[in-house]
Length: 223
Ligand SMILES: N[C@@H](CCC(=O)N[C@@H](CS)C(=O)NCC(=O)O)C(=O)O
Image (cartoon, rainbow, N blue to C red):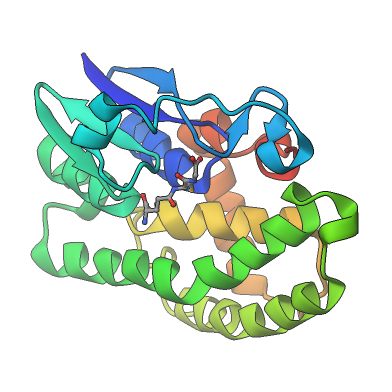
C-alpha cells in the first residue's frame, strides 16, 4: 500500500491527501512533523510528531519537510508534484481529462499557488493561528491580506471564464488552489465580493475528498 508521511494540519499534506482520495489510491498515513504535534505548534511548548529528523526520513526527503510518499519503493516529495504524479499514474481522465493542454493549464495554477498565494498565506497562518498571541504582528497580517487580494482577483477573473481553474471540469489544478481559498475564507478577512470564486468554491466544497481532508476548520485554525 502507498505510504505517506505528514500531518493533517499541514497545507502541503492536505493537498497530497486530497489528491490520493481523488485518484482512488489506498494509503497509510504516518504522522510526522518537526514543528507540530498533537498539542499544536512547538512555539506553544508542545512536542512535534517527529520522524522528520531521523536519518531514515532524511534519506527519503533531505528537506525534512512533509509530505513524502513511498509508492512501491518510489519516493517522492513536493506536494504539488505528488498530486501530479498521482494524477498521471492513477487518474489521468479525472484529474486532467488525459489531455496535455489541460495538464499544463492545471499545472500552471499549481505552480502559481506556490509562488503567488503560499508566501502571504503562510504569514497569515503564523500570525493568526500558530504563533503565541504576544508574538503576532497585526501589521504583517494586514499587509498579507492586501497582497492576497491580487491573486484572488486573478482567480475571480479566471473563474468568470471557466467553471474550474483549468477548464470546465474539475482537475488537479483545483486541489492546491481550493485548499488555499478555503483557508482564506476561514480566516474571515475583508475582501470584495467575488461571485465567480464563490460559485467555484461551493462546487469544490461538495467533493467528498474535500470534506474528508480539507473542510474541518480545526485543521486550519488550531495549533
Ligand atoms: N514545497 C514543499 C514544502 C514542504 C513544507 O514546507 N512542508 C511544511 C508543511 S506545509 C512542513 O514540513 N513544515 C514543517 C513540519 O511540519 O515539520 C511542498 O509543497 O511539499
